[in-house]
Length: 401
Image (cartoon, rainbow, N blue to C red; front, side, top):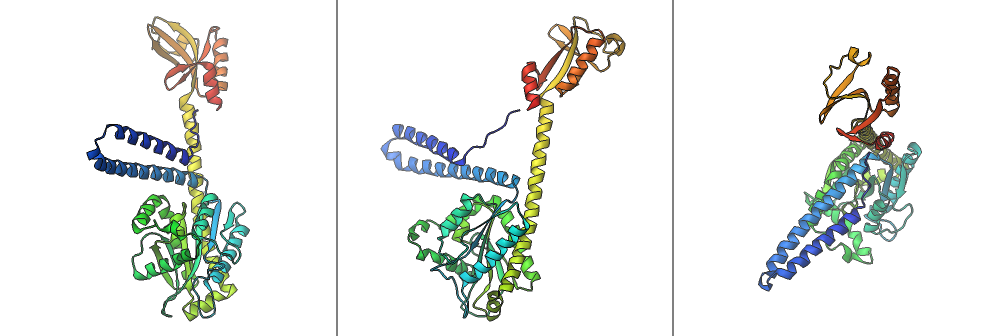
């Protein structure tokens, strides 16, 4: 049976660019200079469209491949760190709260799921650039990216927890949060690498990652439900243009665990036992996510295996040819020495008579023995694939594989 080998997306893109370049060069040879500007604009528009479709295809097939493997690798990203403290309360820093919750969450996953690899973008008080956080997840082909933060506001009134997925902000508050979390860019040595991340690019990126969006939203919704069970104020699931989510290529969420600018939230989040409760809530949501993801992976794998067995059975059929005649003989047992289930098929000018029909070479050999014992000493085994006769050697090889 034929199998498709895995194709590296980079190879697809390389071939795509080479094809496009060859088209472009061919155009240059025949175009008039007066039309150059218009033709070039049309060309680039088509190239961008085709490039977008190729990327969508790669992400789609990557998502299918990821789903079939279940949830095996989780990257946990404690926000800020080192020279970047994040937001601050009167007695607390975001980087400390985020790290506390993240480490406790990671330990819970490791203790309960030996089949899951947990990777931290940082496990100490150190500075990690935004794009490097995403690269860690992408390099390790993570099945889930969990980014943990804490919030702040000019007013001390806002409180509660909220979880974000990638998208455009819909309120001024969401925009302010995204801007604050993205402000760490100014502390990096090369902030210019982010200048192309525009609202249009975020929309495009969200479309590209739409294969993961439902999973991200589902996970985020479960997180908020678990926070609510703790008695935390549920501020809902929202969208905003966080750079770290923009750069990842897997289901990803960013959790704002509470407002350090609110006295009650700050007091809650500063305590280790409460950080453990928050980590436990996220873990419970992860547990549901993993169960669903693994269930889908198992179902897809089983369906694929069943399909393989079905295709093998359809692809290779063995029969025993017991006779050939120019006359059409009724396929009754008394005409064939007591053999039942004899099949008649006209091939050119002759009728051929087959006994036994099976996908198993072992079984057809038994049928051949029965036919020979009935007196059909010249009987022999033949094989068919997709309705056409093939060599016995090839059929045996296909059946075994």
